[in-house]
Length: 232
Image (spheres, rainbow, N blue to C red):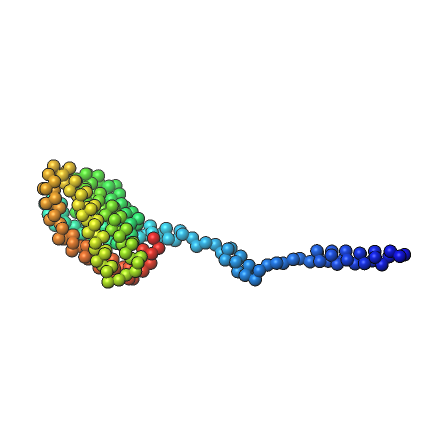
């Protein structure tokens, strides 16, 4: 009987410990619910952007084809057309990757037999002809001018933007289109380098005018759609 109180006291302590252990312990920070919600929110799908990119590529590929079909005039063995305007717009508006893809799509459609080259021409024979060098240069010209446009437009439009974009077109014209075109003329027509260069030089003024038009249109497009190049 002398040890009964101590036993009761020990039993009471045991019950209190059991009650404390049986209570759920919720050490959840206040902001944890918000964190879980943010984590559980599914990431925005990029499929819409991919679909938009494909649409842009298709539209500008079709634009190049439509401008190529517009009647032009002949300067020696090479016709003067507006297709280079479409290539310039593809690079300046879409940037390097999508611009390259749009110009490549145009070439693939023509090589497959669709009448999208000048005067409704089509097929591999056109690409292997006197204008083949110019045609093959289009994707790379759009790539270079598009890269310049991406760097310029992502910094924000300013008074210098048209001049910088025009400089990008000049780079693509004389670093890409000119050597491709001259080599194509030399190969297909057996021209010497000075003769082929003289043929190419006959387009320099008209190409400069088309470049100015492309720059003005591209600046208007980027003002209307300011995130067109920011996203890519």
